Length: 312
Ligand SMILES: NC(=O)C1=CN([C@@H]2O[C@H](COP(=O)(O)OP(=O)(O)OC[C@H]3O[C@@H](n4cnc5c(N)ncnc54)[C@H](OP(=O)(O)O)[C@@H]3O)[C@@H](O)[C@H]2O)C=CC1
Ligand SMILES: O=C1CO[C@H](CO)[C@@H](O)[C@@H]1O
Image (tube, rainbow, N blue to C red; front, side, top):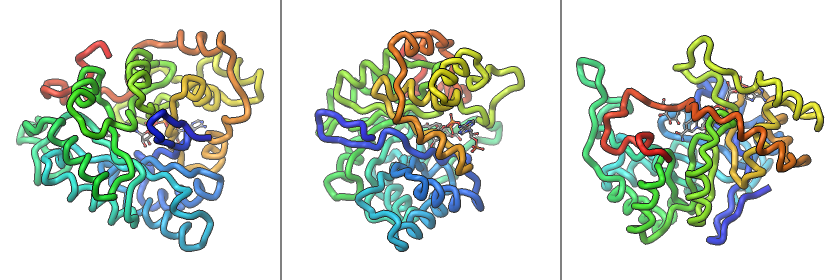
């Protein structure tokens, strides 16, 4: 199943997340994902594993399991490459690692730029992040050129708030095709999703299962997949809590990129197209909202383009 927009942009509604898919495991995970039917892989330079993801894609293409046109591969421009002259460099590096000649979608990963020409997470001697002044609008103009040159079929943004998205929309030649943001029943993110969808932008939810293994998780943090109501709704349809929360997003016309390296779970997460939730169930699930972000990055909250200071 695809999500599509009036602009002609089409993306498979369920993709495989690859953040924290460890080196040594991610190649076989992506091969297994393609075998069980995934056609959308969500990657990023910052995940440090694009080379192995690329090995898996190359193997599946060369054995004829799938053809390039049937795959949808997303990557993301990291914060240290926002300077316009670095955008193409970064895109080409991701393409080289992924062993592809084009990306289906290239996203600006965050609106905040970090200092260039250092490591991905540049910090001073006190452990404070070192920022760059680059305006994401200038980065966007370089992203548009990637479409002109055929290196990306579509471009979009991730972790932008409504004000930042509006600023791009008011000043762009090519509007963002896609917005990738956090959304799960604990962080429904409804106002931003409505804003983007009304502007014709396709929305994809990251951390749709609540990102239980995020590196900064604390003991006692709420565990989305343990919620009794999700278990009860799932039981009615013979589905798991994970399938219920993924279906919740599809009911809102929002795509999902759940991460797993386990083939059984990958299958489970893809097997969400043969049932629907009622309007009442969608409302009950949305009522879980705690405005609880799994990905807050509070250590860079003083950046001038940190997106989460605005209400949405
Ligand atoms: N644009 C951005 O800034 C961001 C993008 N992302 C993207 O979104 C993807 C998904 O988000 P992520 O934060 O990884 O978290 P998810 O919400 O997808 O949760 C992934 C975790 O849930 C486990 N899991 C997967 N399937 C099931 C299941 N059916 N039942 C129980 N547990 C399950 C996985 O373990 P196991 O692997 O062992 O199965 C893993 O620990 C990322 O991998 C990345 O591609 C994520 C964060 C930020
Ligand atoms: O996609 C993501 C996952 O991890 C990164 C941090 O290590 C985040 O910055 C990012 O949003």
